[in-house]
Length: 307
View 1 (cartoon, rainbow, N blue to C red):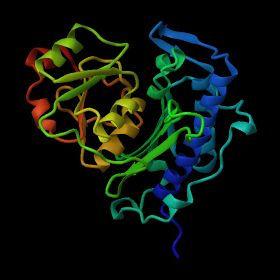
View 2 (view 1 turned 60 degrees about the vertical axis):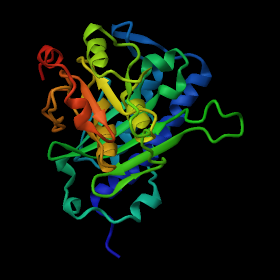
View 3 (view 1 turned 180 degrees about the vertical axis):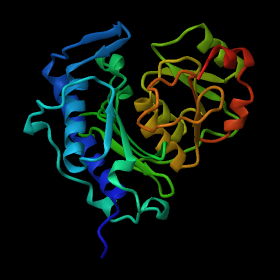
View 4 (view 1 turned 45 degrees about the vertical axis):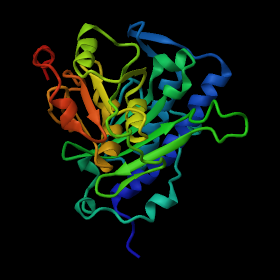
């Protein structure tokens, strides 16, 4: 049998690396000292978990795939990573799946991996643990083509016997796994948006959509999971603030199941290594009925946001 394609090896490794990351996230929380640092202000926090997880993910993947470009949220030195942070395993199940034909010839230097070590840091510090995700997105030719999302605290309210945490993964042209794909009931319009980065424009945009219900939660990864599990019909965020590492993994998984994510103006995101990190024109994402929501975004909102 031919050895697995590079992309499948990267995804299989990212799966195990994300599971290791989840263990670090839970260990930091249970040890009780989060080591919180304010970056740009009280809504832009970094904890010991963000730092350790990024070091673990980046060093583990760089060791296996030295020519891949890896871009993480936190600006950290990479040289002082201790061996206990390195994960060298992989998910055997993923390696058994055939790589989509259009990706079989990819070389290491053509891949860019976008890492958000802890998406929903503010919520993590406030104990809203189900909002938290670890995001590893894989891009090729400027497009998000594969992603891994780990929820370290999935099931955390289900009692002592529940299995804590889960890993969702997907590859374009193959599908997404680790969850039950569900659509919001027909005719229901449930908008999911930011919890801690709201402003007048965000709210104006949501009002224009006339939703039946609005859910406010932290984390881009968390919001896209709500879309693919049928808890929300559209993720709407009419503001700068989201970065490429927030959207790369969720985009790949959403696109793998037929959904769509763009900025508020309808432009696709680009993920090549030279791209600017900020998604300045916000986010609009749906599993189904993208055009219904896109057509209802007011022009005043679009004009306020410059890509």
